[in-house]
Image (tube, rainbow over all chains, first blue to last red; front, side, top):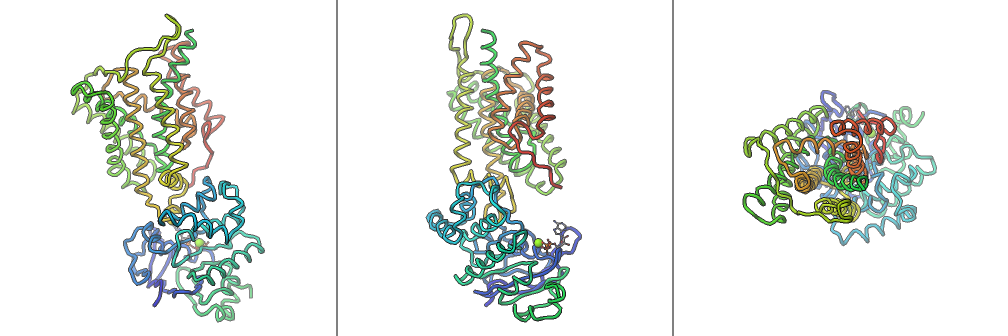
Length: 235
Length: 292
Ligand SMILES: Nc1ncnc2c1ncn2[C@@H]1O[C@H](COP(=O)(O)OP(=O)(O)OP(=O)(O)O)[C@@H](O)[C@H]1O
Ligand SMILES: [Mg+2]
């Protein structure tokens, strides 16, 4: 059974038709990636799943429940966490406060062990726990954003361009962490422009082009596909 | 000695402005709107205390409590009915609505309680004489300063130590990100209006105890001055509201004493303009260019 099932969603910004009938699914335990160029509609899809945007038609089902009309803060309670594009950590709050906010939906008793888990995965964050997030480097902010999302103990973790703006060495590190999280049992929906890196970790992949899915297959299939190589992997 | 007396008057008046300015600044911080009806909530609070103490002869503390309860509820209702439906609207529409709510409250008060000025019974009386015939402090002034200190400490602890307070800061910074954490942003905004309005009630009682006249327009000038104080200190900043409030109280008092009673508001605004020319974000504000 699919953990997440997106069925023929159409999403508009006023009169702009940004997502034009997108369908895909994510099964438990998978890493699924959604790749596409700037403006293809990737973030729009994630924000629709999170309930920040509403599809005009079509449906989003999570654990066999229709998310229609469910407020974004309730979506998180159901086990769907998103690390938004551009990280969006709370810049004026400390690292530790950011993590506490990530645990907003969780019982108080889970916060301390949750933070300890995050620090184990991201030791850099522990060194900077009392620093305000605005003083962190881009890579550290990305780690904080991921740690913060993990605090809600999500069943599905959605990452929107986690490698954006990072140096190659950090991109590699972020993708290693994604693999670790996956190995530890987290189901992941990964949105990326860095097709090479995304396809290499993904079980399955979808290519989004101007609001529509143009291709889909396993990570390896798309990596080998001439169409993908030409458009996204530099030939 | 008159200099010291003026400093004392300025600080106590400034403490009241600071308490009002906190309401403006917290609401601005989270809802990014100027709640021009905030001053009129002060007036409603003062009427509540006036009726409780004057008409029903309840003790002062009951008057303050009634004012706080009614204003808290009023703040929540105003936000829910007037501002929440405009969450996505252009800021000009929200501003005009706020001005409308302000007139609604003033006219409502006039219909319910009449336009005639009432004499407010101060919640505390008497003065503390420090130097006979020369230097004295009224107990209302002392109470105002104490309230301001307690409120500042309380709010600082609230925003840094409690889950609700941290949630408020998170929503002030980034509402969409806060929603992605599972935070109910609407409830948080509502709570902020509740806190700001409760503070307005306290300020209203203190204000009318220091200057014991009460009419439906009582809240508008202190409201505008406290708004000025909030901008002066840096809108959105809690310490800025304190600093702006105190400075405004002192400048106003000195303007009255040494320049001219009629020109004191002009002096206040002249200082504001100079500060904003030098520091556009206010004394303690961070300059963030408006995103469109
Ligand atoms: N708030 C908005 N108002 C109007 N149009 C928008 C808005 N946000 C996005 N769009 C439009 O919707 C389309 C899809 O945008 P979206 O942000 O989902 O793309 P994306 O695939 O995430 O791109 P990127 O890789 O640059 O993040 C774009 O054409 C964009 O211009
Ligand atoms: Mg995007």
